[in-house]
Image (cartoon, rainbow, N blue to C red; front, side):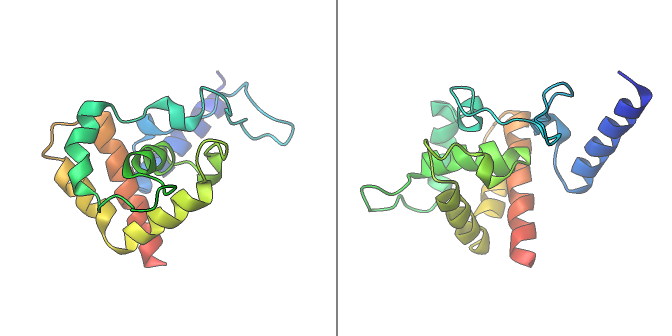
Length: 155
């Protein structure tokens, strides 16, 4: 690794911390995995973002009651799917469009995230989750989510 690459990585980590994100929870692209336009390719198969680290049953049991009631529509996105998607994107500093549209609607996730951000749900979830015995990496993701929600509601 060259000194220039090391400096770039250090600046990216510094920028992430300045935004209140934990660099350890961000899915950084590898230096050798680039598309023609210089950006990192996104996985769109079983290794997709949504499949990377969904909530396990124990985590879900601790967090479920902190979210609003489940939607009543049969085809509506459930809270667990929503939270898994939000963790995959906002918890790791990614874009909504990084979600695989064949598995979950990025636009529906973004809209529901924004609605819950305006209601203060993500900040409340982060505060309450600190007392639930979740892993440090999961708490960091929830902090990143609360930070993104707070930034979204300021604009």
